[in-house]
Image 1 (cartoon, rainbow, N blue to C red):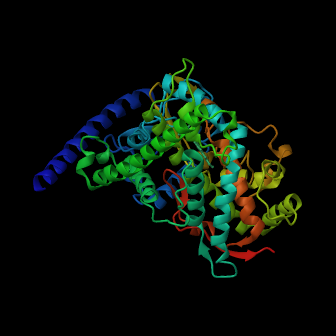
Image 2 (image 1 turned 45 degrees about the vertical axis):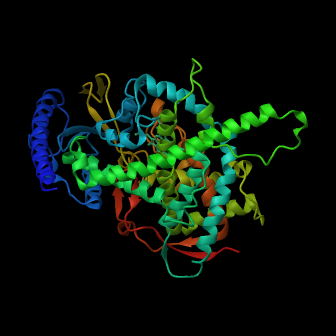
Image 3 (image 1 turned 90 degrees about the vertical axis):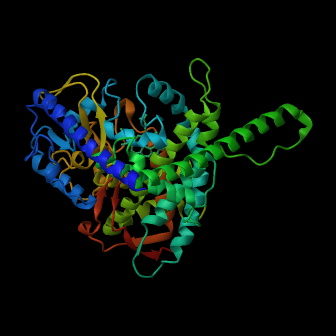
Length: 510
Ligand code: HEM
């Protein structure tokens, strides 16, 4: 054990030297190539801007946001994160150059730490693998398939509503976890066809492993001494990472093999059964996994088990925390803005009347104001606070040359607050997204789902889920909050979340 510790310390020292050498190299290359791009100071050759950064996640995010506000008048900014230089984008014209291109599809270096869990699934892959996968998977998000998922969303939100009933006319409570577990149940059932019952059993091993893994990945991204794959297992975090990984992968492995058996059995049954076999059983719900097991590429090749696991794990990762945060932010903002909430209620009453029935696709289409609320909430609090690429070819942004292989990071939180495009940017005004007010807006001024060829494949799924869940909650309750923005404890890790939770009070509507 002692020897192992010594080895770890030795390794850590070596790593610091390695990181130092790398930084020097990057500094020289960047000094040569990016010398004109304005940056933060002080910036030291080996440490970059490291000494400027706050260690705590909440303070770090506050600092980045404050700095970017200060530098908004600059066309772009260079920032050193540990040994890596990043060009930071927060103006529509520069964001467009990056996202609109079919060349810059390679994800940035920190995404590498997602790979032990997600492999090279849609989010992390690049080149031909990404192109072929994206083509194969796009049809699984077809409108008719999404319509099937609405049933799951209705069922799971009804469970949430039952849980929320307990809080009616009581003290303020933190709804963040309740809403998050509902989103988790929805994605488990739609992605894998598996009901994990997280809402009623928040202590599931799989659920705990998902959260542990997200924390570990974010921590590793921020800590250069944990970057080496060789050294990582020697740290406590590395061992916890291995444990969580095992739980996550064996869970998805089991679900995939069960599902493959089920599909084989159904096919067998169909073959064995002639027309006189009688009634077929109740209609089985489709999940993304069913489609992944049967889809083929242009040459007719199916996806392997490993390929499928990558994609299912990717949906599990990208598909619940993002929507959960977005729904929480919308609830919070409506709680702060009773006049907007009244408009939502009026619309809900017009569409549903006294009915207590499930939300249908037809209903969702009519919820125009709620849709604007969802969009405005994602403007103010984009669930994915940063995303980044490595440029694949040289390009130019507002007169600056950005060389090939530069790490470039987009910050929607700042982009969405451009005062010339969104006047009084801190104000919550769903009306900004009325068609007449959105006309002519720069297409890259608002990118909560990214944009261009590598945008979010789950965007329609997410918007549908948000509208359905919020409609069901708000048909039952009136929401209030006295929590101020500065009391949210905004943290921009993998997801933009309130570290102090979302504290609301509920009143029964009818
Ligand atoms: C409000 C909810 C959501 C938001 C704000 C959101 C946002 C994003 C963003 C910004 C990206 C680009 C990330 C990057 O370039 O690094 C992305 C990619 C992606 N999202 Fe979402 N997402 C949401 C919901 C979902 C859902 C529900 C799913 C799946 C069911 C999903 C699946 C994906 C996948 C697979 C990618 C990678 C696509 C590719 O690179 O081809 N997302 N999302």
